[in-house]
Length: 269
Image 1 (cartoon, rainbow, N blue to C red):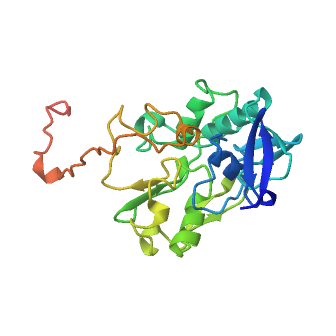
Image 2 (image 1 turned 135 degrees about the vertical axis):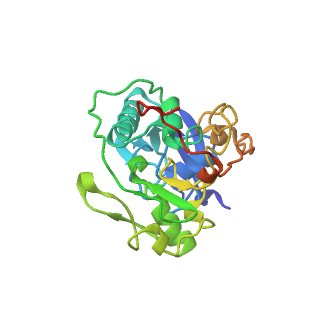
């Protein structure tokens, strides 16, 4: 590839080389410079909706996942101002949904949770908790959807549409009532499969898409982000080194247990 196909960028004082046609995020990833993101995922068309990847390009705020590289670009990413934007965005995602990390199946591998740790968010922000009541669809034999945890990243929409070719998911509603819907009355009436890319662990960044019979996936201490900060794989140019050991999930048949007995006061004994 000739020199005319390469561009030089400056990000936070570090010079990197990019290829024409790359986005800022692609160029930074290839150079081992991590830019936080939630709606972007490898193999999916970027849409720039979460804005967590916001950077300043020659003084103008842009989304790194959709912004093409330009020659002699001066990029600001790890600055106090930009990280304050990111903290506010991530904090608002926690406050507008129901993210109860200790009881969530995605805890330890949740990108929203891991992003909060990376950005140093450990206390509630001064935003009101909206505490929405959104539908939970457990109709499918292998998959459940909990919209209370959804951050509207659209990764499941793009994975189902562009990779699986099924169009199972789409946005419905507007404004504060916007959520992810399916192309039928319930998930069980769609052609969704547990083997779809849209249902894989790497697509949903939170615990909205739940793979039944997999429980909490891995023991505490062996989960993806228990010992590794999010983005470390890009910064070190090394794959994740988390354990693949899964927790065995045992199905419980209520018929195997005797009925509860009650005493004269109606208390269970």
